[in-house]
Length: 307
Image (cartoon, rainbow, N blue to C red; front, side, top):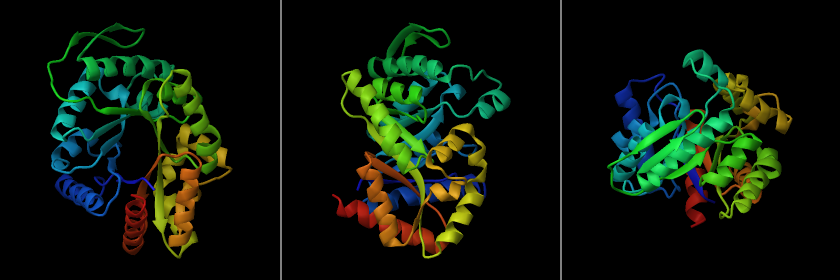
């Protein structure tokens, strides 16, 4: 099984320096124990790209930033950051992009969330030109870039957070794949995988990466773990896109969509996602200290045994 660690936002309850030390320790452990890679989310805490620049050097494994909201930085800034960081990480960066949510874009950042798929398409077109050719002369309806970059080094892989059909089509047609969060087994099997694969095939592209991000807890207290997960992830249920994911699964709370159970049960649930077409799982260990340790141990065992 191709399993990466998905680090949660660690900066809310600790100083930035402590968070960076923790992230570095998690990256080193993931590399040492045979995990496929390490992803750092972009929420309201540390900037994912800057954090990976600070702690990710010298580690030979894929490091993902996922996902960075496109409305917060022009594609030329994103390209400069990504090219610089990918050079520092010896080509190991995976750049995940997302539109975030209407509440953030409009109420917090004061921008328009009108036609987000259209905005993303123009954004990614410019970004890929800058990453691959170091120049872009594009005047879109909403995003414009006329100029060049003087940065050497390899282009990084770009993935798009896609939960709806238009974003999945865009990810299959233009990007290396998609990264999801809070999408359950039925959604991945019956909607995400067939939609993105069809779009990639229609564009003459190879099968895309489908990276499925979910909280994981190895525990004997299933009810307690789900209750704690619901309390921790409760705010995410309020976002329309995540609520739609729960509705697709016929579930009512975030805790129900997490992968929870003892070692055998969690192994079976992970295997089901791969059978459904996921190419990698981004596992976010959650729970008590003991549960998190059990989760790490199982994830490392499953990942290393699949090599």
